[in-house]
Image 1: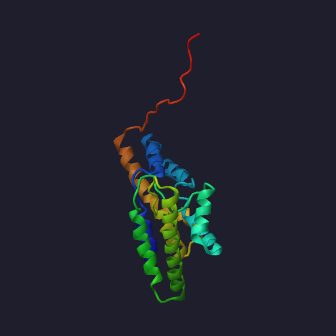
Image 2: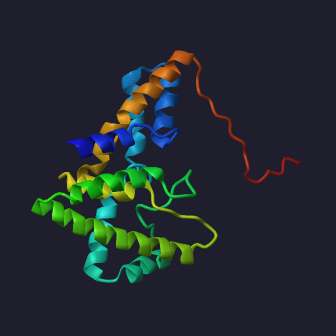
Image 3: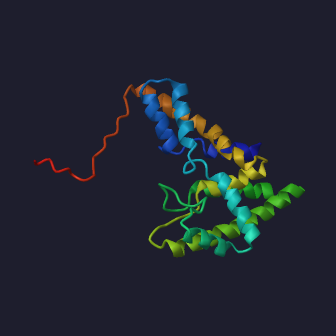
Length: 209
């Protein structure tokens, strides 16, 4: 319970990410709190935002079966695939939340129960994969700084406390909804409609007859 609580607190808010921004946009129309939260949930359904922890588990299992982390990761990148659990739209350094959750996973793995010992070996394997991934990404994409994000150790933590990977996004939403509610109420209180502007950057049509 303490590990899960640590996770929910860690992910309850994180600036104007896609789902939080969607929540604020709908809240700004004065559509009501329920509609605003549903907008956040809709944005969270996308695999690029909130949907990565499950695929992280699939990746770890596939690498373990392959027996060669570097070769597996290099092949994925060569085929244009994303390495789940790495990279962030804002951070160009290691996601600080990753270390917070890693510490929780380490505590779970340090207990004497058999399941905890299994978690300890799972963590050790994940750390090996993490280092291999960072090196492969450094070589394959030298112009970019792609670091570990929160979803890598989210996957290990939620797996350790017993959630199936299909439920990971739901648990993430349970934590983030507290932040959505706070953002929605704050936005509604301003009484201002969010209306971003756009600029056309396509070809200019020839209007001369």
